[in-house]
Length: 285
Image 1 (cartoon, rainbow, N blue to C red):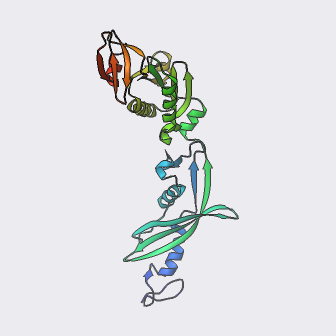
Image 2 (image 1 turned 60 degrees about the vertical axis):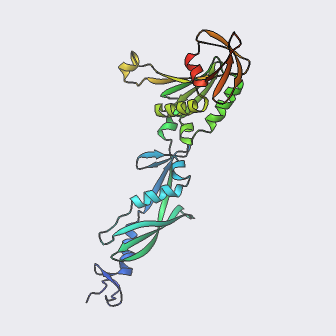
Image 3 (image 1 turned 135 degrees about the vertical axis):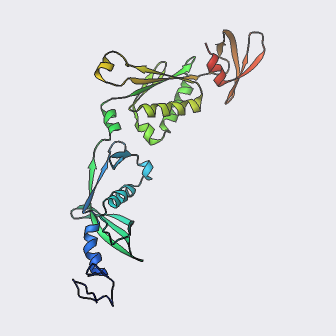
């Protein structure tokens, strides 16, 4: 018959695991199961969190920092071979005389039985700028989006574009290092080429127009120093109002009607022509 080496109970009254009864085993192993403390690293500028060496938007975490804490705690669990599985069930952030802490509960499986262990884990918060925000603070950028109108950008279209920029997903908004307002339109400076292409695609889908991509600074000194060329994305958006005068394929037209997708034009003979915005942009002079 086996006995608990700590409290003396025998296996007739309680399961014995490695010379300890289940209660003594859980008390002993429960202290080693959890990490003593965790560090929550977040960006004070955009609110993203560093998880396993990568920065993740708070939106991707449901805007709940406990999701990040749960992942860090589960990753730090030290599970002995007797425990079949260990799953974090609950956690609660509390304040103590020594700062913040987490009361975490883990459900473990030993054989066919399940048990719950709750321990207090220290919590340290670390504020540091993520790479994207660090670039923004330093005014570094990898891409430029040049938003222009065809033939020019009017105030109404300009305001609508600006409203749509504020509605972008948080990760894309945070990638914008600078917005420069010019007479001919808007320049967006972005810390990420991929984000620039995503934003350009969203703008084109919303307003139509055409996109031209070029590289800036890809030769000469930039190549010798190993610096990547900047991506320049030009978006030309049709700025067409009823009553305006435009030329298409060398022919003059008066804009009679502007619908969401189609535009009705009148040529010099007084005949009406209906075209899509995409077709007009392709043949615009």
